[in-house]
Length: 400
Image (tube, rainbow, N blue to C red; front, side):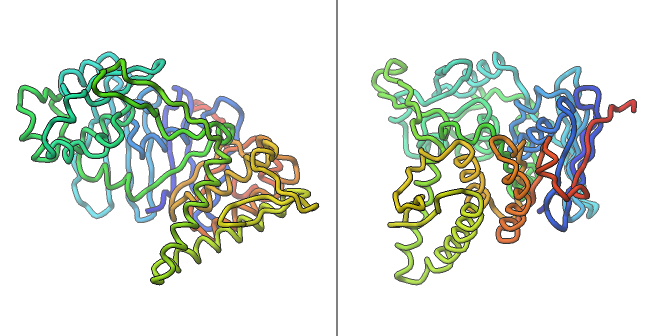
């Protein structure tokens, strides 16, 4: 399910934007001055399909419309006065789909909601972010409850942005309703009315937002903490994630190689191993064309760089620009599913002129192998190079 067009009306109360996606080459370039909403549109699409409605509610706009390759449309209207959304879906077959109005609560209302509806969770706070974990006594409850609460039992926490999405799914289970009485689940009237099509769109129309200026931050899988349930909140302490992204992705590649090779004995791993080899060969090709005085290799199932003189170069010793390009291309090759819409914000950061001129050539090669779509927001004419026919200019106000 590929996205073919993105339209936003009333963005910041000033802009109406339309971005038709290039269906043939699968690369669309968005260009325009600062302040017209290039990055914001990408964030809106990502938040919408990831169902981060609380984040989406902070952006002023009237309507966002997403069109798909089979004729389907998803329209989200925002009522600024009440900060409420109305979701409408049309699959172009004449089927009448029930509209959806998600529950959006401010932070204080959200805290009250959780405390009233989920008495086995208790609140913890890290900076301005609020998270929830099971109280110590929850571990003493029957095994049925573990099944009801799913992955959250394993991770022991859930953050605000994902809470409602998780809770929408949980309240559909009869076991959940059997466990909680009507008095204990005080839901807003429309809380459990999410149509099935909302989740199905998110599952079949994937997106990935890559903000290049954040690629080299510390790898972050979410708030990590350990807890001694016998001590309550006094036993909670936060664990910083010390591994930079460049090390994280190298470990991920090693794990992929190990898993594939372990499966090869009974032939089940051969397709996966061959796929990894194809992707690595392309990664090696594009990286070795860009990097000077060194080459990317595999030794003992691990990615490594070898200098022209034969010495190994630690990944952390690569320049910031080299690390950024390596992590970006690795994510595109190994972490991106077919037909995903990948949105890359300002890839020119830390790129020299030669890299910028060849960036689209590299992306074309990766897309040919992996079959996903890309929107690139850029200020650089060197990125665009000779592909001006792929560009969608943004900048005119509604009145213009």
